[in-house]
Image 1: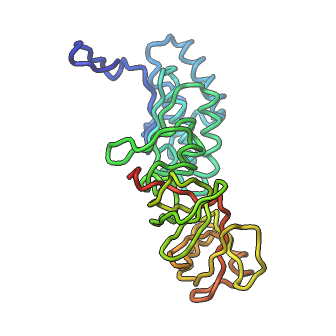
Image 2: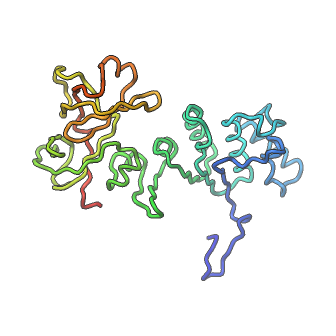
Image 3: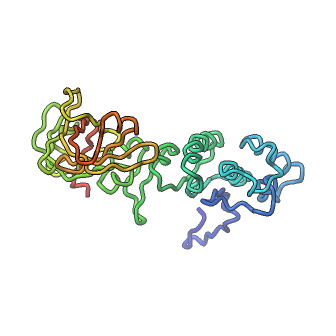
Amino acid sequence: VWVDTDAGIRVRPQKRHLGCLFQDYALFPTTNVENNIGFGLEGLSGRERRQRIEELLDLFQLRGLEHLKPDQLSGGQQQRVALARAVARRPGLLLLDEPLSALDAQTRLRLRGELRNLLRRLAIPSVVVTHDWEEALALGDHLVVIQDGLVLQTGTPQEVFNRPRNAEVAKIVGMETIQPGRILDASNGLVTVEVNGTQLVAVGSPDEGPDLFVCIRAEDVVLEPAGSPVTSARNRLSGIVRDIAAAGALVRVTVDCGFLLSAVVTRSALSDLQVATGKPIIAAIKASGVHLISRREG
């Protein structure tokens, strides 16, 4: 307990045994890597301080960089120095404020797995704040979705991403298509849902409805040329391409199939399918790719 006014407890920040990795790293610009790491070790003897710094240089693969200043380091190297400084005092809890947001997209993707491995090796309970759902999925063992100061859902990343509790959580965890729908029929673990006049088959039960939200991730939508042979997908929706937009290495395609549906494809697939605005197309979705959220859950 750090603060409990009724019990008269008010622990000074310096005594809370915390490590913090700031969003912009906040390294001291006028001193080198070695002194940045050793900043909080003033309570140790010279020999103990030197030994701890050497351990961290090896752990964070900073050997050979110890005499460089922060502006001589890459973004990934700066991150490792900041994290080494945060754990130098062996804190009981590690706080990370958007630890990858200061990096470019390519570096952020590469360092995501590296940060995950480092946190596992350190074995320090860690709280990571992020607005990036892919980052949360990659880094977290337990997920807490917060909006406007309210906890909307908690659970493992897979639980939250696969079964969002309501439409707000679905948006936060990257469900691109969220549409109100209504259950028409149910049989053998499958339900038929109507969305703005278009019928879809989903895995679910009548207990979800009758009124619900239908949520579909863009990566669960497969685009096929109009008139292509029938596939195993339960849902094959005829539609018209309304928009094509770059999404990094991929392309996001918006299809009007009675409602607006997002799909992502590679640039080569876009060319092979001859996708163009205004052209007809088939959007195929497996029943397991259609997620249902009861509107009773808000």
